[in-house]
Amino acid sequence: MDSLITAAARALAAGDPLGALNRVALRGDAPALALRGIAMAQLGDLARAKALLKNAARTFGPKEAMARARCVVAEAEIALVSRDLTWPTKALERARVTLEEHGDRANAAYARYLKARRLLLVGHVGEAEEALAGLEFGSLSPALRTGCELVFAGIAIRRLKASEARAALERAAAAACLVAIPGLTAEVDAVSLVLDTPAARLMAAGVVRPLLLDEIEPLLASGALVMDACRFAVRRAGKVVPLETRPVLFALARALAEAWPVGISRETLLFRAFRARHADESHRARLRVEIGRLRKALKPLAGVTATAAGFRLVPHGADTVVVLAPPVEEEHAAVLALLADGESWSSTALALALGVSQRTVQRALEQLAQERKVQSFGQARARRWMTPPVPNFPTSLLLPAPIPMG
Image (cartoon, rainbow, N blue to C red; front, side):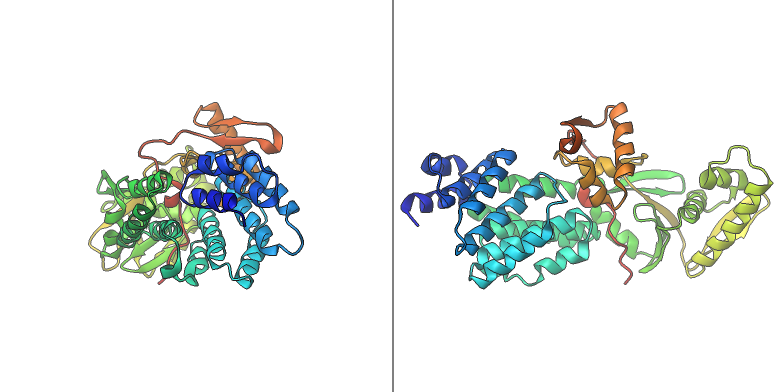
């Protein structure tokens, strides 16, 4: 490898894309094309970067499998940054295997990191943790260590482990200081702000107040009966009754919890569960059935007793009942939470990240656009959606993760 290529690579590693371009901007050989592509990616011209990397991968000879694999890893990072979640992840895995076989452990580790970031973005928290499990952190570069620690922080945030998140962010900040790349330091600072932003609202006995992530973990470990409206479950001291697939039952449970310690009328329950403003006998019959199902579901944690006017929640072994609600509740809050990162998303990527159909996301985006909460650019498959970051709005790191059962 000639001296200019080496110098350009070092400039990129130090976060100096302009310095790298000064050395290889006029060259058309495969290594120079690859470095130019990475430099353009760092400068934000992702379309040009993608084209350069594809050209470089084609230009490398058949015996240069490791160089082609490095191009694939760079393409995967561009896809992740541009929220192209349909990019073929199997190509990244093949590239990782190739790099490990050729002894390029640094780039193989980077491929693992990118896989973990994508898994975290689409809500596969456990798989993201597994993707990083095989890494030897002592051998990683400070920049890569920073990125991996940010993933660990994201995992801890989604699992509501504030102390673990803060520890990971402290390690990330220490590693970022060693490389002194402003963009990396800014990313650590941005994630750190999440811990100082309300992550939920506590509703108890008619009083509502915001909660930081640090306050949620001890609440869930306490003896209180918690109606978790962030993850659609009922919790008490480690015991969990998941109701995410039973929205009517959770709506009834939440209404009863908000009214506790007194009861709630049948008319109010009918409206909360079925949106029935003028209830008839069929609605009342259905309410009796659903209350019976709720009693069975909540039996380990609470009971539901009938009163003259309606029903009342009776917790077992708990002296208080609270509701843990999202900091912002509106019809399409999950879509806004993903868009709050300031990146541009396609409707396909949003659907993958939220685990819903693309048509569901498209309807949500159309309504949000009418309300001027989001904006789009491009047409057809190239259409992207974005919104400026909203102060005090939950980021994608705070979107619901699978409920920990133990």
